Length: 559
Ligand code: FEO
Ligand code: CA
Ligand code: CA
Ligand code: CA
Image (tube, rainbow, N blue to C red; front, side, top):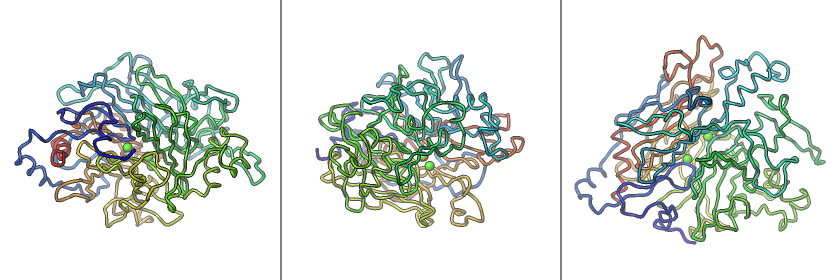
């Protein structure tokens, strides 16, 4: 099962080397597409591309989406825009993923967008700064509004004359919300249910080899709290921030999973076998025999990195979940049957998966500094994992972890871990979050300095970076390996969900939580996207331009 670039390309099964317009999507949390052929490209063109240098955008605290020279953007959809006669686009969009309806037409397809969280001030009018007890001060109507604005959206979009537009009322347009019934892909019920109600906390995600979306439930404890166990294994309920558990009888164990969505039918299922934790994303690799390997990180201080290896082709249920010991380079099995230490504490595999953080700790997994997005480098096969930060441990700027599976085999049980690049002033970025490789293998990265830390003189270590940004790390040319800022987010916002269109000409990107620190709706901290009503709105934009097109052609050099 050794890795080779050609194998990586062929596993996509979507195209062969040499076609000029490349296939849509890669099995990954972001979007890598396949390199294109060089045979018809002149040496002069290749040389010109090799010399392409990027103009870095300086750090900025301006309330706007700023782009470097050669890039342009237009807004595709924003919070509350209608997607059909009955549904509107949700709040705080994160992960985006585009699947063309016809693989020969990269300009018409279904866009999945995660709605990670809600800011009650905007969504329900509940003032969480004034009231501390939602169970006393929030109404059922407010909770219902909040439940509608999380989950995800499927919208059909088309590019016409260089601009992407939503096809309003397209039959495929639909919302998945915190009220949508979702089946558990598992043989045993969880808290008595085989179908649970809703999804929320949908942060990043991925795509499967069979062309469905994966959306990952991250900070689930904010909505229905968490069940905590003391030394005697006695459970208590820790209250949530949003207080939904006071209005709905849905156990928190129904959340914290990887959710798969069929793009056309909207049918959803939760994959229990992948474990329950604050899943940032889920990045899949399909082996030659069609079994799949799924990588996912738990975005919490001192939590872990996991990998699932299926035992049957195309299954996200049958197989084994492992957790990383990055010090010794081992994937540790979380299989109840074969791990006596797990048998001692948990009654069965279902309980191991529900309380997988505790199981991982028992096995001696390595605590990491908030593992977030994961991408597989299409050229080297290395697995890159962003580690955002770990402030209590003094890691303010984070880093990117590189995993090299033994012999490049994704189902290996040993690996080598090292730091790919560290955040900080020297490298020009802090708090890495989302990653995406483009057609040429350039790495695009977004940052997530939290709203409460950004541009604050009392947090001087973050001051030089100003607003959150989008960066590119070119693979070729004079700037190879440098971290270059190419976009700067509006005030308080984070840029998320980078995903390239199949032809590599558009970068879909979410602008999440502009104006997050607003306390008075009459005086918001951001007014982006400046659509006239002076309320900041999360939105998905399409970034296009000469620079993206040139960057994506740089792969011509190596093919
Ligand atoms: Fe929702 Fe880990 O970012
Ligand atoms: Ca990604
Ligand atoms: Ca994230
Ligand atoms: Ca984050």
